[in-house]
Image (cartoon, rainbow, N blue to C red; front, side, top):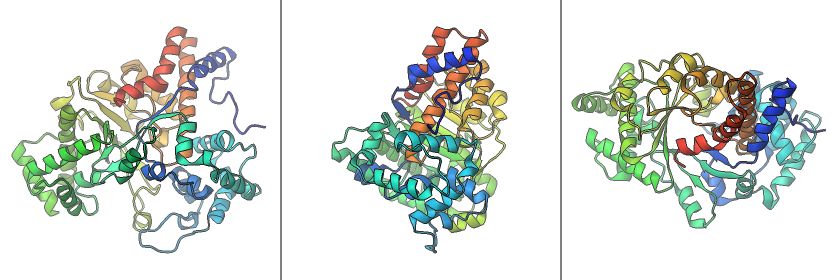
Length: 468
């Protein structure tokens, strides 16, 4: 018996289900455009086997370990490394058994759908993961990983990925991308410029990070002009490795457009570590506007991922570092927050700013009206906590009437869990086709238009939005 229902996520009513299935069948085999994510370029540069099932499926996936943490399983028991070098579980089979023993916790969640899709369609499994099946499934997956067909590049090709973007720090020298280029492999993997560590005064080691930026570029980062020049230099370097986008992970969408002398003075305080909390937020906001202006010059698409209250638990952050699952959505203002940036560059037709949110309440009230009038704005797909059937449905229902489909950026998977990429795209394709069937069934869309839109939502919008 298959692990997944072939008609999953389609409407229950027969006529609408038949339409959704037809739309889906027309796009199910289209190539995957993965324009934003956190897969490691090293995997593809070295092309070595993934070590074991735990390191492939459990350890890199914060969707997995945050659920287990919510039921009292510690991150150390799941093999999540500690920043202080302290002890953590190193036996991958024990980690897998703990995961399997708690697999029932994922019932009804997107994670279960992604994982079951991977187990069935990638590894050929037909048994549900549980405490009883843990070892046999571990052994089966481990034996698969030893085969050439499961090496990273082979999986990339098997998944039918046309392009995959990694996300790399501004000071990264991109050695794995260089190794990929030198290898002659034809898989298209590009980088993305992520400057958070050198634009956020609250980021640990901010001044040292900026000093490193100056050393790499040869620019005098003691001055505001030199600091901006260093960013321009790094952006140009990233473009030589295929970058088409930047990415900015800010707690708020606050932007600013200060006079040059005020911006320079604020930068000096940030570099000296003497700015207040409000001034740090102001500096981050100023840098969003500066980055937008740079994008006008060099053509890089700008992504703003706002609204995550990161590292919510101080102890987890201290023990395990950033991005360890304890990040929580927060209320986010966009109308006032983005006003300085939009007044500066919002009507520029050659600029693309893709907005993401973790605040669903802003969809219809703020984001859709903004994207529905400003040429520079495009709405990113439901992100993180809302990367799901319900999240995608609510997004489409809230924004389509105001900004349409063509002011949105299709779908991206935003994942570290490589094997979940085809599963996530499959969920997005099914969810969008279900929504299109509802529009046709209620007379709001022609059936021929729905087929066109299914292709756009699956492939065309993302490819164009990210200039790929």
